[in-house]
Image (cartoon, rainbow, N blue to C red; front, side, top):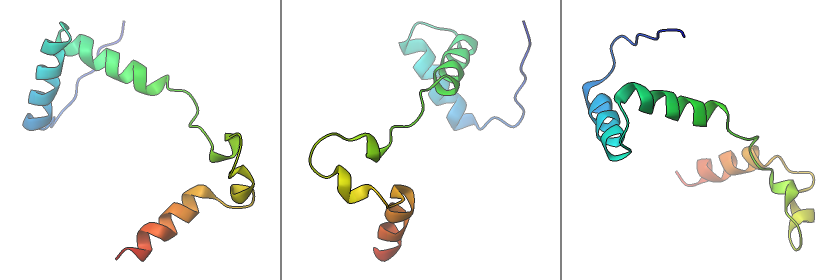
Length: 76
């Protein structure tokens, strides 16, 4: 197995990781492996175009990420 060393790991983030590992009854190393594995093996993000029923046709020619970015920009 490979070894991973992380330099300049923020103390507050490490404390959060350590507390989470304790709650999950894992070592810090086991928790890091668990979190990385879960994150990196995550499924493809769902698309709004996969919706079924009312509303799907409204998004057919719209880039949802672009639409959301424009909406967020309008809040300022």
